[in-house]
Length: 393
Image (cartoon, rainbow, N blue to C red; front, top):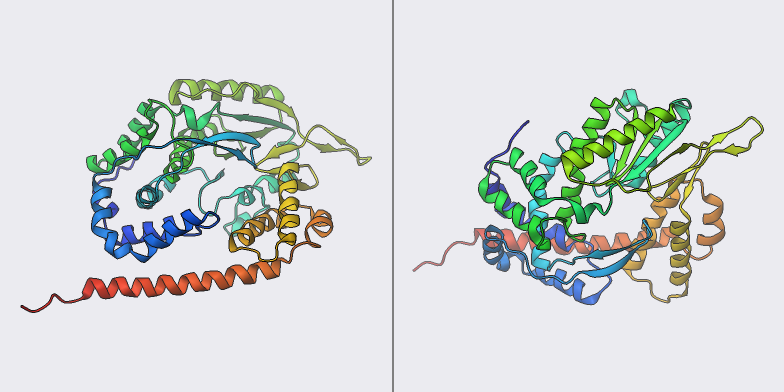
């Protein structure tokens, strides 16, 4: 296993600091307080640099009060922790260092909260595999009917809240041999004040959570020899041609989660006959509800809750005289869902009469050009400040 040292220098570098500020303040909209804080940090990044780099070197978590939200995709209530603006900058600085380390050896069909690996990446048919593309769910369904006869669907019980700190820290220490940087990571891991769980809402948490299950991914692929396996954070789906084999795979995965990772599989796991189209056109079996989509043998549609949120957002925006950039971005995110599903009739009936996506794109592009211009000017100011000669005495 490859190990990494001398990471503190990269973590505390000026380039990493300014990159952390840029990423932490990007796309901050909606609430005015959040927007003002982000703008303040961007405008005073150079002035705050000595204080922030000292804070980064001796990082300590702020005190937080979790708040409850409704997760529209998973249809669950979740408790999240909102980090301070200073903490968000530190989290991005940490992830900038960890990203290339965590991506090394990460399973190719692990999706969610990874750049370039959103839900649509797990769904899409993919390009020709010989030309460098990779097969995903839709292509598996079209190409391997026998191997996609049955579906095993499972997830981890209260995943974020149940990750054991001792095992996570041990796994981090196995690959990171920089004690000072490890202490920063341990401080972030211990943000909950307990010996289990990482806070939902921290940018670092989604990376820790995804990387923590990489070991399980390799066990499923290399030891159990599973052909069609995909994971979206802690939601796992395995396809197979034999129901009995899938039950045996489930038992082994559950044992691995318990013994090696200190986790528990949720009791509602299931093995079922995947949707099949008979010669007369009728369907037997069940579709797969996964990543916000519903996969059938011959089509892919949006999950009903996602579709309702998109149409509700379109209706509400149609009533507004002035549409904010935040609204435009939210609606454009639904375009990504619509583009990769067989839902054109729904779009034509419920979305198109209320919203012009071309107008939204132009509005967001104009705003982004303005932001880029300001960032470029700020960057120039920072460079000039850095090279300014000392006054002659």
